[in-house]
Length: 328
Image (cartoon, rainbow, N blue to C red):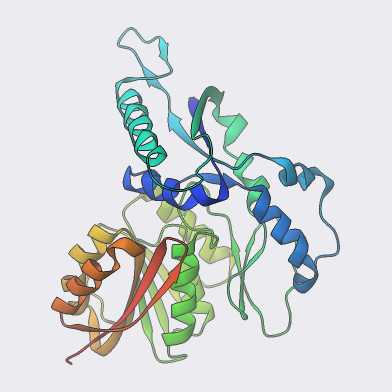
């Protein structure tokens, strides 16, 4: 099978607005190449006990900042290969329109140039692994890819992850914000946790490592379900963590002390009333995938469903909301 590789060239300042545009278009799987991030990594590497940096990664210090994603190739009715395809053509046309709008906004977003090329799946399916390196999320929690050797400190919690095509490596602000709030509000040994839209399983795994009594994840994408289950196995958490295939909380019979949902603003608002039904007593609801510009409307919707807002944590253009159910 062939795929269309789409690369947008931008600047560090342009990363957040571009990822917002892509996620609003339903594109959640993308890689970001940013020389500034690599320079920051080199500056901080001693604090993370790195002994060396692979020579093959040094080119990252000179790359033009870009975001890359992949589209499945379309086909004409005749069966001939069509790089655009009607669906992809509409998507790319909308992307061009969004970039033109972004160019009119104040800020240094770079040239916002799009490049496309046709590639075989073997050419790209593992390419993103070059950019997924161990990342310290909090003082206690580090996320590492399964193929990277890493030895943590005595009390460090290490999440080994192979996200495949599922969303969630820990490096996106929405994921890291959720992990930080889980660490703050999860009550070790007592809380049962529900992760709605669990993707790669990273938040469910974080909850289990932080000492949740039990954890259930729900994911609509069957491929992501398999990825999450494999990540659970890799972290040795099969006895305390289960992932189910399902559409949000529809048909789910489960009560938790904490629900986490890293989705999108509209889904968080739609889900909040149902989340209240799955929480025991005055329990905790953590949500993200929310742009800062939408935080007030989302927080208001959550409050209308019987929650009080505990805090709103921000990073870049994203935020996460921690709320507590007001009544038993």
